[in-house]
Length: 285
Image (cartoon, rainbow, N blue to C red; front, side, top):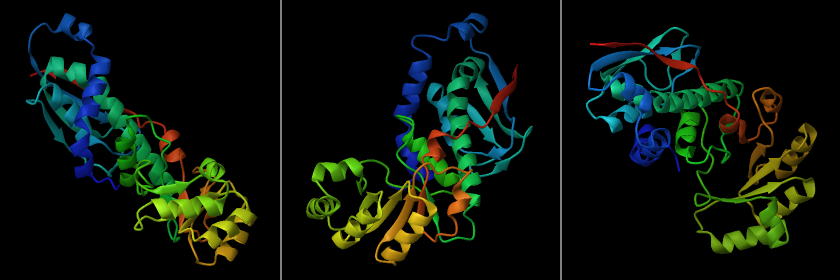
């Protein structure tokens, strides 16, 4: 499943509402203490460090789900490189809405922008190669749709979205089936013929078995540089090749000479720091 902006926005309302309910179980006591009645106001969204912006429609949706009369004027769009001190947007509406939605809206925007920023840093190290950067299923529960969209905004590509989205036979699937060959045979018999069969392998013998079984994609997991070169020479175009296993921006450059089709990195989603953004200068209007 590929995620563009339109696809994501069709699916996020229940998730955002759940996040709001997590933050406001009955009322916002702090806001209601200082703002007992409706007062119109405006607040600025400010960037506090350089990065890639991502999640502006989600940010806006938090406020409009609380009150659809809230107005967000955006000066930047997803995918834009933003700089420290830059004014990203102005939000206008009931001050109670602006205060109550602030943290949830920022949580989404900071997290999504952080993933996009980190992905951009990693993807830039693969520029000029034939290798596609992929994410994984190592995502925050109930936030996968946001994080995988953010990877795409940052210049990466999506691996399968979930367990229904593709066949990937990992070590425990192979163990359950009894061998690489049996696992591939069973997958070919069960899965629709239009689906590719990917197999995770850890040794050269498993590479040979996967090729003989007719795997479409071979994932070389946690192999050394020399082991990957040996495997690539043996595969020789008979299957697509993915490299995986503790890939980060600190070590991905060492893999660029191998000519593999894909490199997947769980770090894109599980280790990306947030991008610091803030709502400032709230005032009545």
